[in-house]
Length: 426
Image 1: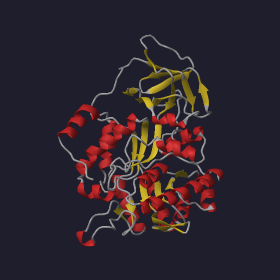
Image 2 (image 1 turned 180 degrees about the vertical axis):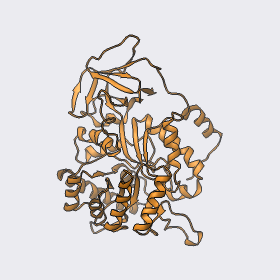
Image 3 (image 1 turned 90 degrees about the vertical axis):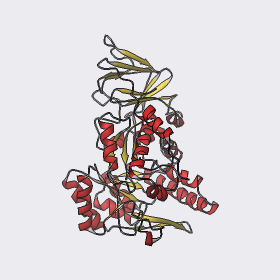
Image 4 (image 1 turned 135 degrees about the horizontal axis):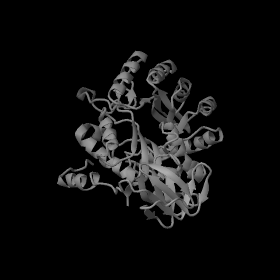
């Protein structure tokens, strides 16, 4: 069902999105809580304190310096953590018929909704994200990223891809619509290596931080066997990766299975998102090259629970079951994992569910948290600045009630959010 838009949306924008966060000027801040998680070692520091000066962390420990004029924020029986990082989001999507919203809603309307989505994700503790395609809204995510960076609207730090890239008749090419209506693709079409290079140059001109390519789709499961069509050859992907690398940037792919996942790993992409099926050779390459798998379990669970028919739900659950079995093999093979939820088609601000599912399907609580902090920072190019609570790092700090190492569900109840030394929640 299409969402109604009225004066209430404008009021929400003026009252919430553009409301000023809590600022403390030049005064140092000390955050105090019952616990602090050293994300690198898994050690719980109790009590835990973080001294923040400006936008950076100055000191971390059980008792830090309290300079004169310090603003002390006591967070009680909670655990301090580095801000979460979601490596696969869609700010320009919301729950509902995905194909219809990209056709019926204007880019301007979708950009307004994207600002609301960015706020919701930040309030849920996600201080950095990678937007994996605007789904037909072109380079509108450039404006959202820049507005956040300029402090005009609240939201996570963003790495953006603009429109994703697809082949004619591919995964996002409006193939379910009447062709006589000439409905546009939700991705930018490139059919060979030359076109890929041209599209990539255009995407970077428009402000993209990286390139997202659809390498496989659509998927099917028959008699327990998973299959998916590849879209680009290994040589074509190599051309794309090479062009991005020329500008010091990289390529991430939507790739659910073989042989597309192998082509992507050989070509040297930075991540393989969804990764339902990886061969032994693909897993070896990903381990050796440190190519991240981004599982996106939450979107699969959501679609299965909200399917339009019992038959569709059964098929989706069969695919999810297959993915969870393969995920355990990937963990055993040493494939690096980054947390990514594919939020957008399910409600923004609820994607901490991904941590819960990663633990359910085979990860330890610490490994899951590391996938959405340390690993996410590496994948997004913020290693050494984000992903841990350490002196010199950007002051992206959140708090959750309880101890997430003992109960991973605690991540779904973020009670405090600071980004860059500015308090956004409560």
